Length: 349
Ligand SMILES: *Cc1c(COP(=O)(O)O)cnc(C)c1O
Image (cartoon, rainbow, N blue to C red):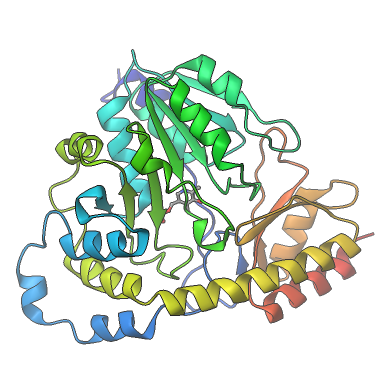
């Protein structure tokens, strides 16, 4: 006997990356947070918040965020839907589109939450393997004809991107929804935003967690035509963006200069870290993100992960097929990255 639906009993809960207790001194390169502080303009809005903003319910549609995000992306505000992180948008999409009769497809390895959310809906997961170069398996994804197809671009944990034409081709061949999860777009040279206007089945997801240094605020948004968004609005929590997040996020989005300057620093540090790891004998995948997928010489990734952790340096290790000989390393400040590579130099045999 169980209180739960059978698929919930069978579900392996999603395990987020470790978050050390506040005050713990670690070099944290495991969950792709931005090493630089958020926009001062956004922090001022937070400090100046008036009591009434908290006494009242927030705007159910977070209109201020939709306007600010629309302005950044060159879209009207009604082409934007805000959520409690982009994870909230993913939840809405699965709730609205996936069930035991409507499947979910995505290339593997990718963001593990896609599988968890599909399983909560009791939807069949069609997992298509990437090849070792992380080419997008367009044919197999198109053949799957899932109700929801998800592609993270840049992909996590590989950091790789694909030509716009490939995603356009895929969108045109799917009868279901194509979700392009652009959590790391702020660090990439290209994105698929232009497909939103031309492809009625495409939704692009963005977040303030990575590029805007606001992972703790919980604000993400979806960009799609208003008809598609209307279906998601029906299943969202009534007040899914709180009053604080709504105000602070609108200010952060308006401060593109701050976000772009930090992204440029991260990209420069990424190039430096690629060089240092390559010199140490790592194989490093070409990343357009704020992290690197890297295979240590000999492939002893788990031992290295543990040895680094013992020295107060956290990176991400995935004990799963095709990743258990690699590490995903968030790009930190140059000082953090130097501490990492110095530790690795000592630890490698
Ligand atoms: C970090 C991440 C997200 C989640 O972002 P939130 O806005 O913090 O919920 C979504 N997709 C991918 C691929 C991510 O890496």
